[in-house]
Each structure stands twice: as C-alpha cells, then as structure tokens.
Image (tube, rainbow, N blue to C red; front, side, top):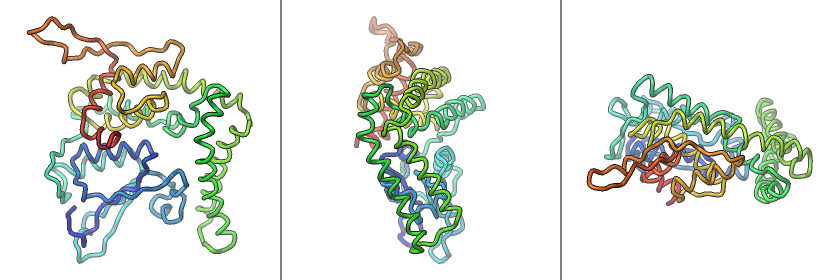
Length: 337
C-alpha cells in the first residue's frame, strides 16, 4: 500500500455497532497499519444498510465487517484494479496479520512494528483455535447474546425499548428493497430476493417476542443461554488461557477475537471497557448468576519483588487478560477514543 491516490487502497466496511468490527480495528492497530493505508467506511447496520444492493455486491451474505482489498498485480496506477472481498472475521484477521509482515509483499506507509499474531507452535495453534472456535460459535454470537439478554418479563420489556426500533428499521429497509423489485424500479436476481425474504422473516421472528408472542419460550432460551451455555463456553476458554494473554506473554490472534467478544459480554452485564479486570469479570459472574465464579488460577507476576513482602495475587485468568488488553494502545483507540 502507498500514499499515492492513483493506487487503490483496501477499504474496511465496518460498523461501530458490530462486535467483530471492533476485532478488525484492534487487529489493524496491533499490526501497525498506518491510518492512510486502509479507508474506513461505516455501514449503519441499525438501519439495515448491509442489505442494500450496493453492499450485497461486496458481501452477498450482508456480513459486516467486510474488507475489500486490491489483488496483487493490480496495484500499479497504469493497470486495471482487481479486488477481492473478505467477510469472514477469522479469515480477515489472519489476512491482516500476514499482509503486514517481513515476508509479505505489501507496500506499507507505516514505520510501526508489525509483530506476528500467529501462534508460534502447533500446541499454541491448537489452543488458539479452541478459544476462537468457542466464541465464534453461532449459539454465542454477539447478536444472539444481545437478543437473549433478558431473563424475566420486566427486563424483556426494557430490552425491547432499545431493540424494537432497530429491528423495525432493518425490516423496513428490506421491505423497501423487495417493494422496489415488485414495482420493477429495481432489478435483482431471484437469489437476492430470496435472501431478503429470509432476512425479513428473521427480523419479524425477533420482533414477535416483543409483541407478547411465546414469551415463555424466549425466557427459557435466554436462561439456558446465560445459565448453561455461557458458563460452559467461558470455562472452556479460561481453561485454554495461559495468561496474561491467551497464549502467554505475547498478543496473538486469539486475543483479538477474545477481546471483542468479552468486551461485548461485559457490556451486556452492565460494565464498560474502562472497568478494571476484576470488576469487569465480577459483573459477568453476577450477570450469569447461580453463584457462578471463575477459579482464581492466575498469579499476577507484578506482585513478586525481592525487595518487598508483597505476595502474589491470585486472580481469574480472564480478569488478568482483561487488564493486559486494557493497557494496550489498541484498546484505548478502539474502545476509549
């Protein structure tokens, strides 16, 4: 990549409302990409902009974030540019990691270090994959967690105040596109129209619970999510963590994924990115309920000193992980600034 305006740059289509968009922004900062190397374009998913015909040409499944990158061999100003779009979060972060490294052919304008985020050993790669696969599972997706973040009728009513306007706006956008097709003011493939109908049905199903449809079923699913599924996933992730970062003393791909997902979980539990690690994790424990607590199985190394009588402090690995990530400049840029 270069500063020349004649040479195409990568474009990241992201949303401040998207948890995985935050992960991509963290990766950009951790890899040291310059601010002029990637164009950032906001997609308002609260208004269903990812369903627009224009965006669907980039990401047929309407996935945000999506990174559009010029292909190697088409970077010169005197040749036709060719692009590819990457929408899978895992593939996207791996691409960003490999595209700015000592072995890459990327033309970078940044002088910042480009540390490798890839696991260094097979064992670390296995641990990393287990963490990422656990939190990338559809059953614990950020949208699913948000939608099921109510376990009684009062909290469901409160959740509806923020979610219903968004769901209605997204449904209206889809209906508008389908109506334009019916009136022949827009021509789209049958595949795209079928996709819109599918998404319309999903929005309407989500809205139905806020109209007192199958509330008991919803509350049962929500309780199962927060009292069984989430504790199981968090326990599995905690067991894989080495500390303070996922794979030890160096930031890796697993940390990028886990930071974004865990910060979303803490927010749903009433916390914020500015919370200290112990406070953030206690919020999650309280939100889960049923006396669920993480084992205090990480000893803070900062407590050791031959010149003091301080003893090592036992903390949960996730609390130590939170504070380690919170201390990084990438965290401040993405979550604070």
